[in-house]
Length: 182
Image (tube, rainbow, N blue to C red):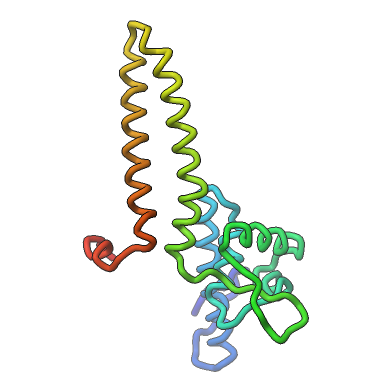
């Protein structure tokens, strides 16, 4: 037996209707978890949920279909799709349907690197500028702050270099993952 979102138990026997319902519930659990991860990284939970529903779908979905699957308002679905389009996480799909349908960016590394390029690199650049400006003033003082800010400058430059190397690769190679325990 599986537990549905509203607390009802689902018989996980092999009838097609039950299997379909169980699969939909499993997909919703995945979407909810990706939403939580996205929220942890500073995005809205709904962005992760919408992207995941599209990612798991065998075909492009309309805003209305996304709204129904996730149980969200049309406005929330539309705003999430607009934001995801700006990040390059989803795009309009060419279909025979009149309504606009969306498909996800399925290259997850491309998605992550785009966000890192746009967001993380920007904050590192801003941080380095602030640290260096502060350091030029603090060098004239006798306290430990100049030395400590200098360490922040070095650390920021190190992280910038690591991020640059990671992003310049374009993708994670198989040898990059061999050392990871999965």
